Amino acid sequence: MQCHEFILSEDYNKMTLVKSYQAHQSRVIMILFVLEMEWVLSTGQDKHFTWHCSESGQRLGGYRTSAGACGLQFDVETRHVFVGDHSGQVTILKLEQESCSLVTTFKGHTGGVTALCWDPIQRVLFSGSSDHSIIMWDIGGRKGTAIELQGHNDKVQSLSYAHHTRQLISCGADGGIVVWNMDVERQETPEWLDSDSCQKCDQPFFWNFKQMWDSKKIGLRQHHCRKCGKAVCGKCSSKRSSIPLMGFEFEVRVCDSCHESITDEERAPTATFHDSKHNIVHVHFDATRGWLLTSGTDKVIKLWDMTPVVS
Image 1 (spheres, one colour):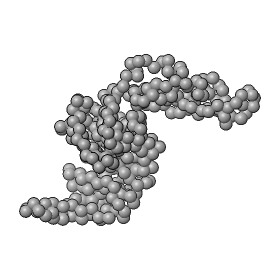
Image 2 (cartoon, one colour; image 1 turned 120 degrees about the vertical axis):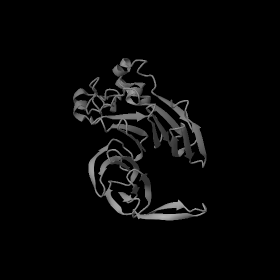
Image 3 (cartoon, rainbow, N blue to C red; image 1 turned 60 degrees about the vertical axis):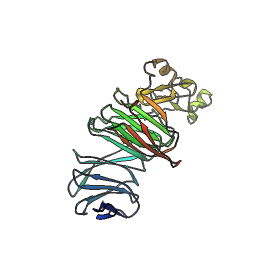
Image 4 (tube, one colour; image 1 turned 60 degrees about the horizontal axis):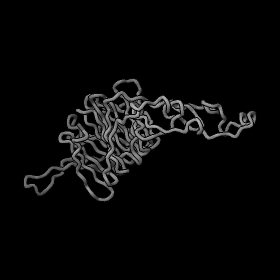
């Protein structure tokens, strides 16, 4: 499939084709024009990322991703490109004038990556997914920190970042517009621990036949506390709580001891929730004026003044 570049002629009634780029063998999914480098970046359903010289139209290089790519961001200073794909993986490539090299890959989503947003100041990458979650990746800190944000009931469709206020705006297919305060000290969610029995009361889980036989007890279903990550039974994790600093703005399962330790201050929300009244498909955020443009499956375009909440 070809990508075309047009300009308007002097009579303003016709467009003139400037360049044509033979970019992909199937549908082009995302394109990005890097004015500073005179590059055109693109991803396609053929699982390829490519980039061209916008002046000559020459293909400078490409890279095959693990699945169809659906997210694309570029950092001009480091010449790093971030590509998210349908497998949930994010790939970082280093682009040179006529070559590219793989920097790293990482994966934290259980669904495909549907949106990427890069903050060049804090050097943080945000990824949204069809698994309803957002992950904040600390790229610049080189600590491998990944902060999870849970605030949507359907796939995340778009991410925008307001640098001057350090607020993240996420829009979802559930119609939700969430404004996250990223100027707080957030915590990583713990890894879920493996165990054959409840790590609180030592009751066996249903696959632990030996302990069930020895103790003459029926095995229980395994759950996990979202705060400590321990494997627990339903009786020892009967409570629910929001944990905003861990990204859980909605109430989630926690063990009884963690529920008692969470204070009211720790339950204070770090995001505001707004209903767009339509299932959002496409979004554009103008940080200069604080305006958000959304379009939905209802064929309606809505313009929102976000200055009361993004400030």
